[in-house]
Image (cartoon, rainbow, N blue to C red; front, side, top):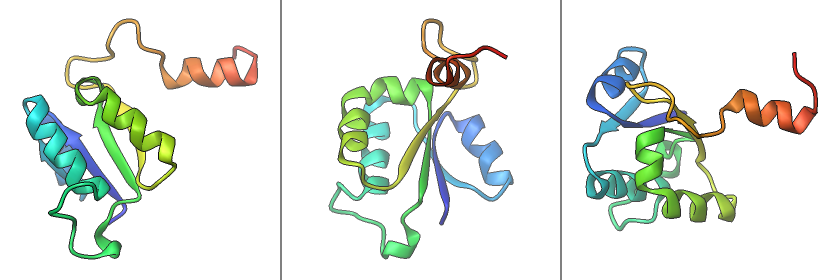
Amino acid sequence: MEYFVIGERELVLGFKLSGVSGVAVSNRQEALDAFNRVTGISSSVLSSADEKPKILILTEDVSDMLSKEVLDHQMTGASPLIVEIPGLHGHIEGRRTLTDAIREAVGIQV
């Protein structure tokens, strides 16, 4: 499994239509359980290392719910790589976009 998505039901359904597995969540506890299962923190770890995704896609809403856990996971450098995408309601105001991060890193605006 290459990718796995955690987010709103409609978004997860869209990803499933393109062949990406995922879990729909509606609150922090559901999001935390799914995150722990996918990252291998929980006791109900995926059955084999081959099934562990290489990229975990989180909506910005889910990432906000799990901000401490996501940061802790990113600081370990362990897989899966976490990528945030806007949710169904669009980009959350005040969050830095990928384009903003690239501009800051490169130092030019195209």
